[in-house]
Image 1 (tube, helix red, strand yellow):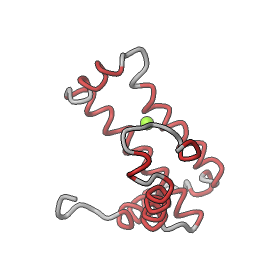
Image 2: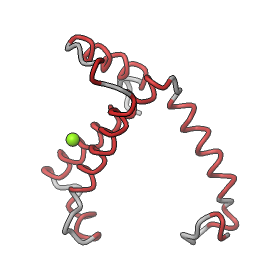
Image 3: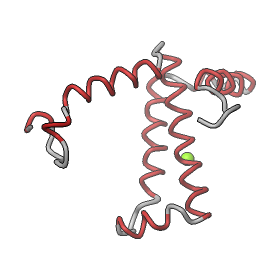
Image 4: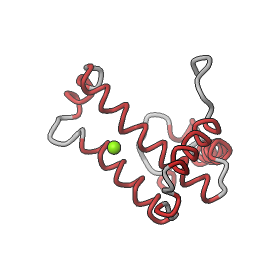
Length: 121
Ligand SMILES: [Mg+2]
């Protein structure tokens, strides 16, 4: 992480201030936040539509595509922060626990170089 970048907690606080200054909490049910996350993830997916995987990979570093990717990734993160705040989830701890669980599910000696699901290893 680059020094002086906001932590997830700081981003969440700023986001809540943004929301509350506009009196938008009333619209942010947990259900609608999850729905919004999915819509933003779809906007991210839309950037790839009709583009072969190799071309998209190359274009991802173009200035225009980089900006669009940046914006959609940020939208996804911001909704995720709102969801986890509302649900009382510590996102960083949840993510760390999930990586640990995945390390157990996909031991290197069994999963290296294969895309097989853990149930098939
Ligand atoms: Mg968006």
